[in-house]
Image 1 (cartoon, rainbow over the protein chains, first blue to last red):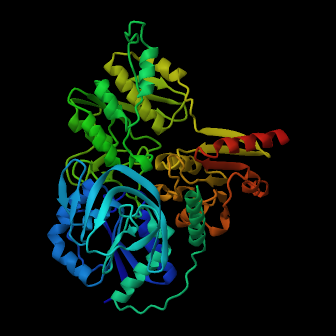
Image 2: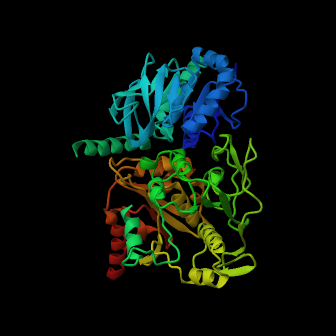
Length: 243
Length: 365
Protein backbone atom coordinates (compact mmCIF):
# COMPACT_ATOMS: atom_id res chain seq x y z
CA UNK A 1 0.00 0.00 0.00
CA UNK A 2 1.25 3.48 -0.76
CA UNK A 3 0.37 6.88 0.62
CA UNK A 4 -1.14 8.16 -2.56
CA UNK A 5 -4.86 8.56 -3.20
CA UNK A 6 -5.46 7.47 -6.79
CA UNK A 7 -8.35 9.02 -8.63
CA UNK A 8 -9.67 7.63 -11.91
CA UNK A 9 -11.28 10.43 -13.91
CA UNK A 10 -13.68 8.29 -15.89
CA UNK A 11 -14.08 9.16 -19.56
CA UNK A 12 -13.35 12.93 -19.29
CA UNK A 13 -14.30 13.64 -22.92
CA UNK A 14 -17.40 11.48 -23.05
CA UNK A 15 -18.81 12.43 -19.64
CA UNK A 16 -18.41 16.12 -20.20
CA UNK A 17 -21.38 18.39 -20.29
CA UNK A 18 -21.06 21.44 -18.07
CA UNK A 19 -17.48 22.23 -17.13
CA UNK A 20 -17.16 19.07 -15.05
CA UNK A 21 -13.40 18.98 -15.51
CA UNK A 22 -13.44 21.44 -12.61
CA UNK A 23 -14.21 18.50 -10.30
CA UNK A 24 -10.94 16.78 -11.19
CA UNK A 25 -9.07 20.04 -10.68
CA UNK A 26 -10.86 20.53 -7.32
CA UNK A 27 -9.57 17.14 -6.14
CA UNK A 28 -6.06 18.28 -7.04
CA UNK A 29 -6.39 21.65 -5.30
CA UNK A 30 -8.16 20.46 -2.14
CA UNK A 31 -5.73 17.53 -1.71
CA UNK A 32 -2.86 19.98 -1.97
CA UNK A 33 -4.41 22.12 0.78
CA UNK A 34 -4.84 18.97 2.89
CA UNK A 35 -1.19 17.97 2.26
CA UNK A 36 -2.44 14.70 0.79
CA UNK A 37 -0.67 13.05 -2.14
CA UNK A 38 -3.30 12.61 -4.80
CA UNK A 39 -2.80 11.33 -8.33
CA UNK A 40 -5.38 11.62 -11.11
CA UNK A 41 -5.45 9.27 -14.10
CA UNK A 42 -7.60 10.01 -17.10
CA UNK A 43 -9.48 6.97 -18.44
CA UNK A 44 -9.96 8.27 -21.97
CA UNK A 45 -10.99 5.09 -23.72
CA UNK A 46 -14.42 3.78 -22.70
CA UNK A 47 -13.34 0.29 -23.79
CA UNK A 48 -10.43 0.23 -21.35
CA UNK A 49 -10.45 -2.49 -18.71
CA UNK A 50 -10.34 -0.63 -15.40
CA UNK A 51 -7.78 -1.60 -12.79
CA UNK A 52 -10.21 -1.16 -9.89
CA UNK A 53 -7.60 -2.31 -7.37
CA UNK A 54 -5.42 0.66 -8.21
CA UNK A 55 -8.02 3.34 -7.58
CA UNK A 56 -9.42 4.88 -4.41
CA UNK A 57 -11.84 7.35 -5.99
CA UNK A 58 -13.74 7.00 -9.27
CA UNK A 59 -15.11 10.24 -10.69
CA UNK A 60 -18.06 9.90 -13.07
CA UNK A 61 -19.10 13.35 -14.27
CA UNK A 62 -22.37 14.28 -15.98
CA UNK A 63 -22.99 12.90 -19.46
CA UNK A 64 -25.82 12.46 -21.92
CA UNK A 65 -28.20 9.50 -21.71
CA UNK A 66 -27.09 8.19 -25.10
CA UNK A 67 -23.52 7.74 -23.88
CA UNK A 68 -24.72 6.31 -20.57
CA UNK A 69 -26.28 3.43 -22.49
CA UNK A 70 -22.95 2.69 -24.19
CA UNK A 71 -20.94 2.94 -20.97
CA UNK A 72 -23.42 0.75 -19.14
CA UNK A 73 -22.93 -1.99 -21.74
CA UNK A 74 -19.16 -1.77 -21.41
CA UNK A 75 -18.98 -1.58 -17.60
CA UNK A 76 -21.45 -4.44 -17.25
CA UNK A 77 -18.63 -6.61 -18.61
CA UNK A 78 -16.59 -5.64 -15.52
CA UNK A 79 -19.50 -5.54 -13.12
CA UNK A 80 -18.18 -8.03 -10.56
CA UNK A 81 -14.97 -6.08 -10.09
CA UNK A 82 -16.90 -2.84 -9.88
CA UNK A 83 -19.20 -4.35 -7.25
CA UNK A 84 -16.16 -5.56 -5.26
CA UNK A 85 -14.80 -2.02 -5.43
CA UNK A 86 -18.07 -0.62 -4.08
CA UNK A 87 -18.54 -3.26 -1.39
CA UNK A 88 -15.04 -2.58 -0.08
CA UNK A 89 -16.17 1.01 0.70
CA UNK A 90 -14.06 2.63 -1.96
CA UNK A 91 -15.30 6.01 -3.15
CA UNK A 92 -17.30 6.88 -6.26
CA UNK A 93 -18.69 10.31 -7.07
CA UNK A 94 -21.38 10.47 -9.75
CA UNK A 95 -22.92 13.73 -10.93
CA UNK A 96 -25.87 14.82 -13.09
CA UNK A 97 -27.55 12.53 -15.60
CA UNK A 98 -24.77 9.97 -15.15
CA UNK A 99 -26.69 8.85 -12.06
CA UNK A 100 -28.72 6.84 -14.57
CA UNK A 101 -25.65 4.65 -15.16
CA UNK A 102 -25.97 3.26 -11.63
CA UNK A 103 -29.78 2.78 -11.78
CA UNK A 104 -31.80 -0.36 -12.58
CA UNK A 105 -33.75 0.67 -15.65
CA UNK A 106 -33.76 3.81 -17.78
CA UNK A 107 -36.87 4.75 -19.77
CA UNK A 108 -36.19 7.01 -22.72
CA UNK A 109 -38.60 9.45 -24.30
CA UNK A 110 -38.68 7.50 -27.56
CA UNK A 111 -40.16 4.50 -25.72
CA UNK A 112 -36.94 2.51 -25.56
CA UNK A 113 -35.36 1.31 -22.32
CA UNK A 114 -31.92 0.20 -21.28
CA UNK A 115 -30.42 -1.27 -18.15
CA UNK A 116 -28.03 0.48 -15.84
CA UNK A 117 -25.51 -1.18 -13.54
CA UNK A 118 -28.08 -1.95 -10.81
CA UNK A 119 -25.93 -0.40 -8.11
CA UNK A 120 -28.62 1.97 -6.90
CA UNK A 121 -32.06 0.46 -6.53
CA UNK A 122 -33.81 3.20 -8.48
CA UNK A 123 -35.46 3.75 -11.85
CA UNK A 124 -34.96 6.65 -14.21
CA UNK A 125 -37.26 8.24 -16.78
CA UNK A 126 -36.14 10.80 -19.35
CA UNK A 127 -38.07 14.06 -19.09
CA UNK A 128 -39.70 15.83 -22.03
CA UNK A 129 -39.01 19.21 -20.47
CA UNK A 130 -35.77 20.47 -19.01
CA UNK A 131 -35.65 21.82 -15.47
CA UNK A 132 -32.85 24.26 -14.81
CA UNK A 133 -32.50 25.80 -11.38
CA UNK A 134 -30.33 26.14 -8.31
CA UNK A 135 -30.08 23.08 -6.10
CA UNK A 136 -29.29 23.41 -2.40
CA UNK A 137 -29.24 20.42 -0.07
CA UNK A 138 -27.78 19.15 3.12
CA UNK A 139 -25.76 15.98 3.51
CA UNK A 140 -23.55 14.78 6.39
CA UNK A 141 -23.93 18.22 8.03
CA UNK A 142 -22.58 19.88 4.90
CA UNK A 143 -24.44 22.48 2.89
CA UNK A 144 -24.09 21.72 -0.82
CA UNK A 145 -24.94 24.41 -3.35
CA UNK A 146 -24.99 24.25 -7.12
CA UNK A 147 -27.19 24.02 -10.18
CA UNK A 148 -29.06 21.26 -11.92
CA UNK A 149 -30.15 20.89 -15.51
CA UNK A 150 -32.51 18.02 -15.00
CA UNK A 151 -33.14 15.76 -17.98
CA UNK A 152 -34.41 12.80 -15.95
CA UNK A 153 -36.77 11.97 -13.09
CA UNK A 154 -35.46 9.51 -10.53
CA UNK A 155 -37.59 7.17 -8.50
CA UNK A 156 -35.65 5.82 -5.51
CA UNK A 157 -36.67 2.36 -4.34
CA UNK A 158 -34.66 0.81 -1.51
CA UNK A 159 -31.57 2.99 -1.96
CA UNK A 160 -31.14 5.91 0.44
CA UNK A 161 -31.17 9.46 -0.81
CA UNK A 162 -27.91 11.35 -0.52
CA UNK A 163 -29.40 14.39 1.13
CA UNK A 164 -32.38 16.47 2.05
CA UNK A 165 -33.34 19.32 -0.22
CA UNK A 166 -33.43 22.86 1.08
CA UNK A 167 -34.22 24.35 -2.33
CA UNK A 168 -34.59 22.86 -5.78
CA UNK A 169 -35.96 19.92 -7.74
CA UNK A 170 -33.55 17.15 -6.80
CA UNK A 171 -34.55 13.64 -7.85
CA UNK A 172 -38.13 14.34 -8.88
CA UNK A 173 -39.53 17.40 -7.16
CA UNK A 174 -39.95 15.71 -3.79
CA UNK A 175 -37.46 16.58 -1.07
CA UNK A 176 -34.98 13.81 -1.80
CA UNK A 177 -31.72 14.48 -3.51
CA UNK A 178 -29.34 12.01 -5.09
CA UNK A 179 -28.54 8.56 -3.80
CA UNK A 180 -25.93 6.90 -1.60
CA UNK A 181 -24.88 3.30 -1.22
CA UNK A 182 -21.81 2.69 0.95
CA UNK A 183 -19.35 5.29 -0.37
CA UNK A 184 -20.88 5.50 -3.82
CA UNK A 185 -22.40 8.95 -3.93
CA UNK A 186 -24.64 10.45 -6.56
CA UNK A 187 -25.85 14.04 -6.79
CA UNK A 188 -28.01 15.69 -9.44
CA UNK A 189 -25.84 18.77 -9.12
CA UNK A 190 -23.73 19.07 -12.19
CA UNK A 191 -20.82 21.10 -13.39
CA UNK A 192 -17.88 21.66 -11.06
CA UNK A 193 -19.81 20.88 -7.88
CA UNK A 194 -16.58 20.23 -5.98
CA UNK A 195 -15.26 23.68 -6.90
CA UNK A 196 -18.28 25.35 -5.33
CA UNK A 197 -18.31 22.88 -2.44
CA UNK A 198 -14.68 22.01 -1.66
CA UNK A 199 -15.79 20.63 1.72
CA UNK A 200 -17.38 17.81 -0.27
CA UNK A 201 -14.07 17.10 -2.03
CA UNK A 202 -12.37 17.12 1.37
CA UNK A 203 -14.99 14.69 2.71
CA UNK A 204 -14.47 12.30 -0.22
CA UNK A 205 -10.68 12.42 0.12
CA UNK A 206 -11.00 11.76 3.86
CA UNK A 207 -13.19 8.72 3.10
CA UNK A 208 -10.55 7.43 0.70
CA UNK A 209 -7.78 8.03 3.26
CA UNK A 210 -9.73 6.19 5.94
CA UNK A 211 -10.52 3.34 3.60
CA UNK A 212 -6.85 3.00 2.78
CA UNK A 213 -5.79 3.26 6.44
CA UNK A 214 -3.67 6.31 5.76
CA UNK A 215 -3.27 8.42 8.87
CA UNK A 216 -4.44 11.96 8.44
CA UNK A 217 -4.52 14.77 10.94
CA UNK A 218 -7.42 16.99 9.99
CA UNK A 219 -6.50 20.62 9.45
CA UNK A 220 -8.90 23.52 9.07
CA UNK A 221 -8.83 24.62 5.46
CA UNK A 222 -9.46 28.13 4.20
CA UNK A 223 -12.72 28.21 2.23
CA UNK A 224 -13.39 31.94 2.60
CA UNK A 225 -14.29 32.52 -1.03
CA UNK A 226 -16.48 29.43 -1.36
CA UNK A 227 -18.32 30.21 1.89
CA UNK A 228 -19.04 33.73 0.67
CA UNK A 229 -20.32 32.23 -2.59
CA UNK A 230 -22.57 29.91 -0.58
CA UNK A 231 -23.96 32.78 1.48
CA UNK A 232 -24.58 35.02 -1.54
CA UNK A 233 -26.36 32.19 -3.36
CA UNK A 234 -28.49 31.43 -0.30
CA UNK A 235 -29.51 35.09 -0.27
CA UNK A 236 -30.36 34.87 -3.98
CA UNK A 237 -32.48 31.78 -3.35
CA UNK A 238 -34.25 33.47 -0.44
CA UNK A 239 -35.15 36.36 -2.73
CA UNK A 240 -36.65 33.86 -5.21
CA UNK A 241 -38.68 32.22 -2.46
CA UNK A 242 -39.99 35.60 -1.23
CA UNK A 243 -40.90 36.65 -4.78
CA UNK B 1 -44.03 30.74 -35.77
CA UNK B 2 -45.75 34.15 -35.89
CA UNK B 3 -42.48 35.72 -37.06
CA UNK B 4 -42.31 33.30 -39.99
CA UNK B 5 -45.94 34.01 -40.92
CA UNK B 6 -45.32 37.76 -40.77
CA UNK B 7 -42.26 37.43 -42.99
CA UNK B 8 -44.23 35.46 -45.56
CA UNK B 9 -47.17 37.88 -45.54
CA UNK B 10 -44.88 40.90 -45.88
CA UNK B 11 -43.26 39.34 -48.93
CA UNK B 12 -46.41 38.13 -50.71
CA UNK B 13 -48.81 39.67 -53.20
CA UNK B 14 -52.45 40.44 -52.40
CA UNK B 15 -53.29 37.06 -53.90
CA UNK B 16 -51.00 35.33 -51.47
CA UNK B 17 -48.18 34.56 -53.91
CA UNK B 18 -44.66 34.78 -52.45
CA UNK B 19 -42.90 37.43 -54.52
CA UNK B 20 -39.21 36.91 -53.71
CA UNK B 21 -36.72 34.50 -55.26
CA UNK B 22 -35.43 33.10 -51.98
CA UNK B 23 -36.76 32.74 -48.47
CA UNK B 24 -34.12 32.62 -45.75
CA UNK B 25 -35.39 31.90 -42.23
CA UNK B 26 -33.31 31.80 -39.09
CA UNK B 27 -35.12 29.27 -36.94
CA UNK B 28 -34.85 28.71 -33.21
CA UNK B 29 -33.57 25.18 -32.73
CA UNK B 30 -36.64 24.14 -30.76
CA UNK B 31 -39.05 25.44 -33.41
CA UNK B 32 -37.52 23.57 -36.34
CA UNK B 33 -39.80 20.54 -36.08
CA UNK B 34 -43.00 22.58 -36.14
CA UNK B 35 -41.89 24.93 -38.90
CA UNK B 36 -40.69 22.00 -41.02
CA UNK B 37 -44.16 20.49 -40.84
CA UNK B 38 -45.72 23.49 -42.62
CA UNK B 39 -42.67 24.70 -44.58
CA UNK B 40 -40.75 21.58 -45.61
CA UNK B 41 -37.57 23.37 -46.73
CA UNK B 42 -35.34 21.47 -49.10
CA UNK B 43 -32.21 23.26 -47.89
CA UNK B 44 -31.24 23.39 -44.24
CA UNK B 45 -28.13 25.04 -42.78
CA UNK B 46 -26.97 24.17 -39.27
CA UNK B 47 -24.04 26.30 -38.19
CA UNK B 48 -23.41 24.38 -34.98
CA UNK B 49 -25.11 22.28 -32.36
CA UNK B 50 -23.35 23.16 -29.16
CA UNK B 51 -24.50 24.00 -25.68
CA UNK B 52 -26.66 27.11 -25.48
CA UNK B 53 -29.40 28.22 -23.11
CA UNK B 54 -29.12 24.95 -21.24
CA UNK B 55 -31.96 25.88 -18.93
CA UNK B 56 -34.40 25.22 -21.77
CA UNK B 57 -32.29 23.27 -24.28
CA UNK B 58 -30.71 20.86 -21.81
CA UNK B 59 -28.03 18.60 -23.23
CA UNK B 60 -27.05 18.98 -26.89
CA UNK B 61 -28.42 15.51 -27.66
CA UNK B 62 -31.87 16.68 -26.55
CA UNK B 63 -31.84 19.19 -29.43
CA UNK B 64 -30.04 16.76 -31.74
CA UNK B 65 -32.94 14.32 -31.44
CA UNK B 66 -35.35 17.12 -32.44
CA UNK B 67 -33.27 17.89 -35.54
CA UNK B 68 -32.91 14.23 -36.41
CA UNK B 69 -36.65 13.69 -36.21
CA UNK B 70 -37.38 16.81 -38.28
CA UNK B 71 -35.16 16.21 -41.34
CA UNK B 72 -35.64 13.67 -44.11
CA UNK B 73 -34.04 12.35 -47.28
CA UNK B 74 -35.43 15.26 -49.38
CA UNK B 75 -33.25 17.71 -47.47
CA UNK B 76 -29.86 19.06 -48.54
CA UNK B 77 -27.93 19.85 -45.37
CA UNK B 78 -25.24 22.55 -45.22
CA UNK B 79 -22.94 21.88 -42.28
CA UNK B 80 -19.64 22.93 -40.81
CA UNK B 81 -17.19 20.17 -41.73
CA UNK B 82 -15.33 20.71 -38.46
CA UNK B 83 -18.25 20.64 -35.99
CA UNK B 84 -18.73 16.95 -35.15
CA UNK B 85 -22.25 16.99 -33.75
CA UNK B 86 -24.23 18.88 -36.39
CA UNK B 87 -22.09 17.32 -39.14
CA UNK B 88 -23.25 13.85 -38.10
CA UNK B 89 -26.82 14.70 -39.15
CA UNK B 90 -25.48 13.75 -42.59
CA UNK B 91 -26.87 10.26 -41.88
CA UNK B 92 -30.47 11.46 -41.93
CA UNK B 93 -30.62 13.70 -45.03
CA UNK B 94 -30.44 13.17 -48.78
CA UNK B 95 -27.37 15.28 -49.51
CA UNK B 96 -24.78 17.07 -47.39
CA UNK B 97 -22.69 20.10 -48.35
CA UNK B 98 -19.62 20.55 -46.15
CA UNK B 99 -17.96 23.93 -45.66
CA UNK B 100 -14.56 24.35 -44.09
CA UNK B 101 -11.59 26.56 -43.23
CA UNK B 102 -7.99 25.78 -43.99
CA UNK B 103 -5.58 25.73 -41.05
CA UNK B 104 -4.62 29.37 -40.46
CA UNK B 105 -2.65 31.70 -38.20
CA UNK B 106 -5.37 31.59 -35.52
CA UNK B 107 -5.55 27.80 -35.47
CA UNK B 108 -4.63 26.35 -32.09
CA UNK B 109 -4.10 23.03 -30.30
CA UNK B 110 -4.67 21.89 -26.71
CA UNK B 111 -2.41 19.64 -24.69
CA UNK B 112 -3.35 20.51 -21.12
CA UNK B 113 -4.12 17.56 -18.78
CA UNK B 114 -7.54 19.08 -18.13
CA UNK B 115 -8.45 19.65 -21.79
CA UNK B 116 -11.56 17.75 -22.81
CA UNK B 117 -13.36 17.15 -26.10
CA UNK B 118 -16.72 15.45 -26.65
CA UNK B 119 -18.28 12.06 -27.35
CA UNK B 120 -18.51 10.91 -30.95
CA UNK B 121 -22.11 11.49 -32.08
CA UNK B 122 -22.01 8.19 -33.96
CA UNK B 123 -20.35 5.74 -31.54
CA UNK B 124 -19.98 7.64 -28.21
CA UNK B 125 -16.20 7.24 -28.01
CA UNK B 126 -13.78 10.13 -27.69
CA UNK B 127 -13.48 12.70 -30.47
CA UNK B 128 -9.87 13.80 -31.07
CA UNK B 129 -8.99 17.15 -32.61
CA UNK B 130 -5.83 17.62 -34.65
CA UNK B 131 -6.34 21.36 -34.27
CA UNK B 132 -9.06 23.89 -33.52
CA UNK B 133 -10.20 26.89 -35.53
CA UNK B 134 -12.71 27.90 -32.85
CA UNK B 135 -13.45 26.36 -29.46
CA UNK B 136 -14.72 22.78 -30.14
CA UNK B 137 -14.54 23.27 -33.91
CA UNK B 138 -11.58 22.00 -35.91
CA UNK B 139 -10.12 19.08 -37.81
CA UNK B 140 -11.30 15.97 -35.94
CA UNK B 141 -11.57 12.21 -35.99
CA UNK B 142 -13.22 9.66 -33.75
CA UNK B 143 -10.86 7.52 -31.67
CA UNK B 144 -12.99 4.46 -32.41
CA UNK B 145 -15.06 4.56 -35.59
CA UNK B 146 -14.24 6.03 -39.01
CA UNK B 147 -16.12 9.30 -38.44
CA UNK B 148 -13.95 12.35 -39.23
CA UNK B 149 -13.93 15.73 -40.92
CA UNK B 150 -13.27 15.36 -44.63
CA UNK B 151 -10.12 16.68 -46.30
CA UNK B 152 -12.16 17.45 -49.40
CA UNK B 153 -15.04 19.69 -48.34
CA UNK B 154 -17.37 21.23 -50.91
CA UNK B 155 -16.32 24.74 -49.91
CA UNK B 156 -12.84 25.41 -48.52
CA UNK B 157 -11.64 28.84 -47.40
CA UNK B 158 -7.89 29.29 -47.96
CA UNK B 159 -5.22 32.02 -47.78
CA UNK B 160 -6.83 33.76 -44.81
CA UNK B 161 -5.16 37.12 -44.20
CA UNK B 162 -6.47 38.52 -40.93
CA UNK B 163 -4.43 41.73 -41.25
CA UNK B 164 -5.74 42.64 -44.68
CA UNK B 165 -9.24 41.20 -44.21
CA UNK B 166 -9.07 38.85 -47.20
CA UNK B 167 -9.39 35.15 -47.97
CA UNK B 168 -9.71 32.93 -51.00
CA UNK B 169 -12.25 30.37 -52.11
CA UNK B 170 -12.24 28.65 -55.52
CA UNK B 171 -9.50 31.07 -56.71
CA UNK B 172 -11.69 34.06 -55.92
CA UNK B 173 -10.25 36.57 -53.46
CA UNK B 174 -12.82 38.01 -51.06
CA UNK B 175 -12.51 41.21 -49.04
CA UNK B 176 -14.55 41.52 -45.86
CA UNK B 177 -15.09 43.99 -43.03
CA UNK B 178 -15.39 41.55 -40.16
CA UNK B 179 -12.74 38.88 -39.94
CA UNK B 180 -12.21 36.23 -37.32
CA UNK B 181 -12.59 32.44 -37.61
CA UNK B 182 -16.24 32.58 -36.51
CA UNK B 183 -17.13 35.07 -39.26
CA UNK B 184 -15.11 33.15 -41.84
CA UNK B 185 -17.07 29.98 -41.18
CA UNK B 186 -20.22 31.99 -41.80
CA UNK B 187 -18.76 33.38 -45.05
CA UNK B 188 -17.96 29.80 -46.07
CA UNK B 189 -21.57 28.78 -45.45
CA UNK B 190 -22.79 31.76 -47.47
CA UNK B 191 -20.56 30.80 -50.39
CA UNK B 192 -21.78 27.20 -50.17
CA UNK B 193 -25.42 28.30 -50.41
CA UNK B 194 -24.69 30.78 -53.20
CA UNK B 195 -22.85 28.12 -55.19
CA UNK B 196 -25.89 25.90 -55.03
CA UNK B 197 -28.10 28.65 -56.45
CA UNK B 198 -25.58 29.92 -59.04
CA UNK B 199 -25.03 33.26 -57.36
CA UNK B 200 -21.76 34.57 -58.75
CA UNK B 201 -18.60 35.80 -57.03
CA UNK B 202 -19.29 39.48 -57.75
CA UNK B 203 -22.68 39.34 -56.08
CA UNK B 204 -21.34 37.42 -53.09
CA UNK B 205 -18.49 39.92 -52.72
CA UNK B 206 -20.97 42.79 -52.90
CA UNK B 207 -22.94 41.19 -50.09
CA UNK B 208 -19.84 40.76 -47.96
CA UNK B 209 -18.72 44.37 -48.60
CA UNK B 210 -22.02 45.84 -47.51
CA UNK B 211 -22.65 43.50 -44.60
CA UNK B 212 -23.07 45.24 -41.25
CA UNK B 213 -23.60 43.22 -38.09
CA UNK B 214 -26.34 45.04 -36.21
CA UNK B 215 -25.55 43.17 -33.01
CA UNK B 216 -21.82 43.67 -32.79
CA UNK B 217 -20.84 42.84 -29.23
CA UNK B 218 -17.67 44.92 -29.12
CA UNK B 219 -17.41 48.62 -28.29
CA UNK B 220 -14.64 51.01 -27.28
CA UNK B 221 -15.03 53.94 -24.87
CA UNK B 222 -12.78 56.62 -23.44
CA UNK B 223 -13.19 57.06 -19.72
CA UNK B 224 -10.96 59.11 -17.40
CA UNK B 225 -8.20 58.94 -19.99
CA UNK B 226 -8.38 55.15 -20.19
CA UNK B 227 -9.34 53.13 -23.24
CA UNK B 228 -12.17 50.80 -22.29
CA UNK B 229 -12.79 47.82 -24.56
CA UNK B 230 -16.20 46.42 -23.74
CA UNK B 231 -16.81 42.79 -24.82
CA UNK B 232 -20.33 41.51 -24.33
CA UNK B 233 -21.08 37.80 -24.22
CA UNK B 234 -24.20 35.77 -24.56
CA UNK B 235 -24.54 34.92 -20.90
CA UNK B 236 -24.26 31.22 -20.05
CA UNK B 237 -22.74 30.49 -23.47
CA UNK B 238 -19.16 29.22 -23.11
CA UNK B 239 -18.21 29.85 -26.74
CA UNK B 240 -18.91 33.58 -26.55
CA UNK B 241 -17.14 33.86 -23.18
CA UNK B 242 -14.15 32.01 -24.62
CA UNK B 243 -14.10 34.33 -27.64
CA UNK B 244 -14.01 37.33 -25.29
CA UNK B 245 -11.22 35.77 -23.22
CA UNK B 246 -9.28 35.00 -26.41
CA UNK B 247 -9.61 38.62 -27.50
CA UNK B 248 -8.11 39.77 -24.21
CA UNK B 249 -5.39 37.12 -24.43
CA UNK B 250 -4.34 38.24 -27.91
CA UNK B 251 -3.51 41.68 -26.52
CA UNK B 252 0.05 41.25 -25.24
CA UNK B 253 0.26 44.75 -23.72
CA UNK B 254 -0.43 45.73 -20.10
CA UNK B 255 -4.10 45.70 -19.20
CA UNK B 256 -6.75 45.24 -16.53
CA UNK B 257 -9.83 43.05 -16.77
CA UNK B 258 -13.27 43.67 -15.29
CA UNK B 259 -15.63 40.65 -15.36
CA UNK B 260 -19.31 41.04 -14.56
CA UNK B 261 -20.75 37.56 -15.03
CA UNK B 262 -24.19 37.72 -13.48
CA UNK B 263 -26.76 35.21 -12.42
CA UNK B 264 -28.93 33.89 -15.29
CA UNK B 265 -32.32 35.51 -15.73
CA UNK B 266 -33.27 34.36 -19.26
CA UNK B 267 -36.21 32.22 -18.17
CA UNK B 268 -37.93 31.69 -14.84
CA UNK B 269 -36.64 30.62 -12.43
CA UNK B 270 -33.52 32.79 -12.38
CA UNK B 271 -30.52 30.77 -11.24
CA UNK B 272 -26.85 31.08 -10.48
CA UNK B 273 -25.30 28.85 -13.13
CA UNK B 274 -21.55 29.35 -13.14
CA UNK B 275 -20.60 25.93 -14.46
CA UNK B 276 -19.95 27.30 -17.96
CA UNK B 277 -16.89 29.09 -16.51
CA UNK B 278 -15.19 25.70 -16.43
CA UNK B 279 -15.95 25.02 -20.08
CA UNK B 280 -13.67 27.97 -20.81
CA UNK B 281 -9.94 28.35 -20.62
CA UNK B 282 -9.19 31.26 -18.29
CA UNK B 283 -5.47 30.46 -18.20
CA UNK B 284 -5.08 32.43 -21.40
CA UNK B 285 -5.76 35.66 -19.52
CA UNK B 286 -3.64 34.80 -16.50
CA UNK B 287 -0.21 36.32 -17.00
CA UNK B 288 2.02 39.23 -16.03
CA UNK B 289 0.45 41.60 -18.54
CA UNK B 290 -2.71 41.78 -16.41
CA UNK B 291 -2.41 44.35 -13.62
CA UNK B 292 -5.81 43.71 -12.05
CA UNK B 293 -8.77 41.36 -12.24
CA UNK B 294 -12.03 42.84 -10.99
CA UNK B 295 -14.93 40.41 -10.46
CA UNK B 296 -18.33 42.01 -9.96
CA UNK B 297 -21.95 40.88 -9.61
CA UNK B 298 -24.27 40.58 -6.66
CA UNK B 299 -24.32 36.80 -6.45
CA UNK B 300 -21.62 35.09 -8.50
CA UNK B 301 -18.64 37.44 -8.15
CA UNK B 302 -17.03 34.98 -5.70
CA UNK B 303 -17.39 32.13 -8.20
CA UNK B 304 -15.80 34.30 -10.88
CA UNK B 305 -12.88 35.10 -8.59
CA UNK B 306 -12.54 31.42 -7.70
CA UNK B 307 -12.39 30.54 -11.39
CA UNK B 308 -9.51 33.00 -11.77
CA UNK B 309 -7.71 31.36 -8.84
CA UNK B 310 -8.24 27.91 -10.38
CA UNK B 311 -6.63 29.27 -13.55
CA UNK B 312 -3.62 30.33 -11.49
CA UNK B 313 -4.26 34.04 -10.99
CA UNK B 314 -2.48 35.82 -8.14
CA UNK B 315 -4.98 36.34 -5.31
CA UNK B 316 -3.56 39.81 -4.62
CA UNK B 317 -4.47 40.92 -8.12
CA UNK B 318 -8.15 40.03 -7.68
CA UNK B 319 -10.79 42.45 -6.38
CA UNK B 320 -14.36 41.36 -5.70
CA UNK B 321 -17.43 43.60 -5.69
CA UNK B 322 -20.59 41.78 -4.65
CA UNK B 323 -22.80 44.67 -5.62
CA UNK B 324 -25.15 45.21 -8.50
CA UNK B 325 -25.18 48.31 -10.67
CA UNK B 326 -23.12 50.45 -8.27
CA UNK B 327 -20.62 51.31 -10.95
CA UNK B 328 -18.96 54.14 -9.00
CA UNK B 329 -17.94 51.43 -6.55
CA UNK B 330 -17.19 48.75 -9.14
CA UNK B 331 -14.87 51.05 -11.10
CA UNK B 332 -13.37 52.83 -8.08
CA UNK B 333 -9.95 51.26 -8.69
CA UNK B 334 -9.78 52.34 -12.32
CA UNK B 335 -8.01 55.64 -11.71
CA UNK B 336 -5.44 54.00 -9.45
CA UNK B 337 -4.21 51.62 -12.12
CA UNK B 338 -1.04 52.25 -14.09
CA UNK B 339 -2.44 50.76 -17.27
CA UNK B 340 -4.70 52.75 -19.56
CA UNK B 341 -5.82 49.60 -21.33
CA UNK B 342 -9.04 48.24 -19.79
CA UNK B 343 -11.23 45.32 -20.82
CA UNK B 344 -14.76 44.70 -19.56
CA UNK B 345 -16.55 41.39 -20.11
CA UNK B 346 -20.24 41.11 -19.19
CA UNK B 347 -23.40 39.47 -20.42
CA UNK B 348 -26.26 41.53 -21.77
CA UNK B 349 -27.87 42.30 -18.43
CA UNK B 350 -25.73 45.23 -17.22
CA UNK B 351 -24.83 46.49 -20.71
CA UNK B 352 -27.08 49.54 -20.95
CA UNK B 353 -26.24 50.71 -17.45
CA UNK B 354 -22.49 50.33 -17.96
CA UNK B 355 -22.69 52.06 -21.34
CA UNK B 356 -24.53 54.96 -19.73
CA UNK B 357 -22.02 55.09 -16.89
CA UNK B 358 -19.05 55.19 -19.27
CA UNK B 359 -20.66 57.80 -21.53
CA UNK B 360 -21.52 59.96 -18.54
CA UNK B 361 -17.91 59.77 -17.43
CA UNK B 362 -16.82 61.11 -20.81
CA UNK B 363 -19.07 64.12 -20.45
CA UNK B 364 -17.62 64.88 -17.03
CA UNK B 365 -14.08 65.08 -18.31
